[in-house]
Length: 572
Ligand SMILES: [Zn+2]
Image 1 (cartoon, rainbow, N blue to C red):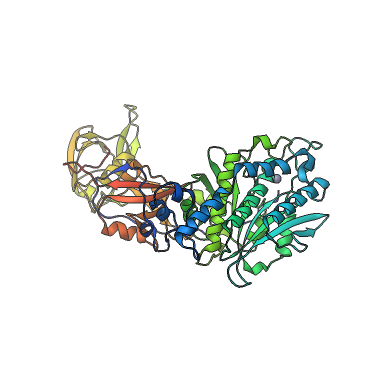
Image 2 (cartoon, rainbow, N blue to C red):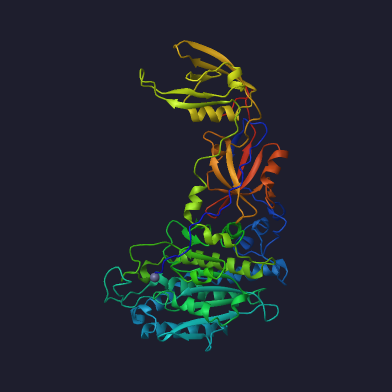
């Protein structure tokens, strides 16, 4: 493994949190996901050629699936059938068989330059020949380098001129052989079959290459299928190709890396690089509807696999990885432990992704800010919320009076000339109830006062001398409608990221969480900055939010329901 070597300087631009205006007492309900048609999802998204859902389910499904793809000479109907067949050509049996061959003891752990590694390379060459792909190495499919090492490269043609842009879809096929002190967990001397690391990714690239032959038409961009050698010796194969590209490096627009896709657990796939270009998260969410994987995005640009040399040279990338396990770099990383169905799902999703990127009309840009981002920047999004809108001019805190030991909510601050000051409230008083409903915490009280549609509330107070009093507090400004904070995210130009959700708020009741992305409101795409705020400003509830969490889309309905009192829900 090589160290990441990328900086941690924060450059993620935090945009000002907008504050909503309008009426409230909203009750949010989870609704079964509602289909959005293509128009609702966005003007860029046109009806898309889809596979199994299109064939198996209703026609609207074709329209839902976020079609980011660009050109295609076939009619939509024809293309649906063709894509369907291409996706279905990725089978568990074939994936399993490729892994089984590569991870057989006879391959002796596929160490680069050793007989087992050479045998693996010959197998891959045979498979590429069978598929009828065009060799794209320096010596047929091979690109020899170093101490008997060989990358393999094959090309899928583009439908335009020879100078077409290139996508690279790769995986390393080597492993650590019998292991050395440096690279094995359980001691050298045993055959390390490397079924997951990385016979799985190798089999995935083979199956995706085959799926393109089933698709049977050139794509807008060229696709280079790459099998890297000597990754385990320090990313030697991918580094060598980047330094000695067999196709013009300045045409490479994207790199997809599959490293260890054979141990899917709970549907969870780690995805790296999602911020190295624009809109990738939105794109993957649209493509993942059928595979329904849990895409665990990281802002960490890990440097320990073959995407790293490309990323260093400003090529956007995605790395798919089904996670670490006890057999990692151990002699027990065997074929029997592979989750074959999991590999099918990952490989099908990646095929869809490659096809979408390959055909996309708009350019694929590198997002250089990704070089300065880390997982810490993601965490920083969810630090303290910005101050919520102030409707009272007072601050409250949870307080445990020494005499009673119970819990009280104490007024800790009263701003002069504020509604609280006008109501005669004083620092140190305890708020016992609002409109007769007991107060349970400062946070809940704050949420209640931010969300209530009543223009005034009656507070029951316990004064400094212990006596009780009631005061009417006239609230300033409009109540919050959703009770959440969010930011624009330049990496996802058609979405906002939720950063904070107010306790007890409609957003919380709807199940929205910090970290969720919203890509549409009432079917309208968020296709320009601050579109979300603009739609909310001019729209009455109910709202329908298209929410993405971990690669899964969900439609959440927000209704504006209130009782006769106009009270916020839930209680303070
Ligand atoms: Zn490894």
